Image (cartoon, rainbow, N blue to C red; front, side):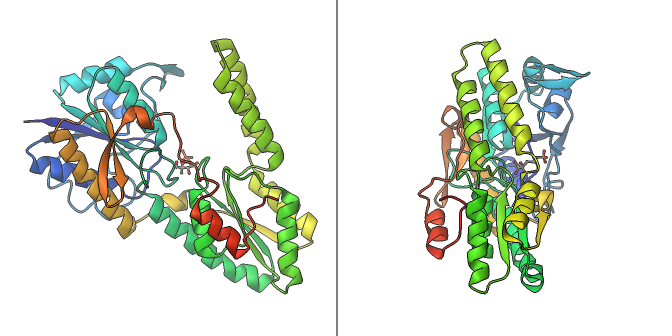
Length: 372
Ligand code: F6P
């Protein structure tokens, strides 16, 4: 009989419980024992777990968040007593203490990397791609994205009421970390007039000109959907320079210096949505208001598409474990699931390609993407 452990790590995301249920029920059906470690990698380190069975796996399909709890703690940099410590060995020990055959890690890009580290330290892992950002490399889509897309789209729909009634600019900030999938998708679906994503550095004058053009044609309001990671052309230059220096750094000292430079640029990025709104008011003479959607986008009942995706990847995950296909991420591939080697996933991010059909569509509609 096989024994497996499951943990959820990184930000919570709609569909996590559906995935836990999918893996858990399919694993029980294949005669496996299933443990759920609490609060991500920290629970594995502290040996905090629950036994998952048909009873506690029931009734969770539609519940938001994760019944296992989560954290952003990394095995090799675990905050303990004010210090960051490498606790990989303790996790490996706990894995063996439970005689586990595999650890299933549900998470985004960071979790893929952390699971890979544990794999390199000698244990069997299988991962699943979750995040509202949809930025995990190697999968068609991540679960959580569809729900967040729906929430952000509905928010843009609702913001239209105030925008057109008060003849205002509404700048709505949408999550997505360093990628623009969520902003671009919801911006198009919600009919935003300007869409600003990290992949396309923007010029504030171009955005203002697009809004003024709308005003001149009688449309006295504009919705600007801006990704939390969007960058003005000026900041983008400094950001990519610092990033390139960090990647090229040959030793620890150079890496530390480049990291500090990158952090300084990140600091300058903070509050960019409020600054953008103020600048647009100044340049257009129109009233502008900001809405930051924040964690609302990750909350509540997962959409039907996310439940389906998480369930089909979860059940495929149990199959991959049973057939001993370890060291892989269970990726969505068309209507099916594919076992993608973790080394092909780790350290890569799925950004929006500049020739993506969504970008072409937005441009064809006359939506401004803030570039020249
Ligand atoms: O990765 C999901 C995400 O919601 C990102 O879109 C966002 O940048 C980040 O997590 C926020 O993280 P936290 O909830 O830890 O502030």
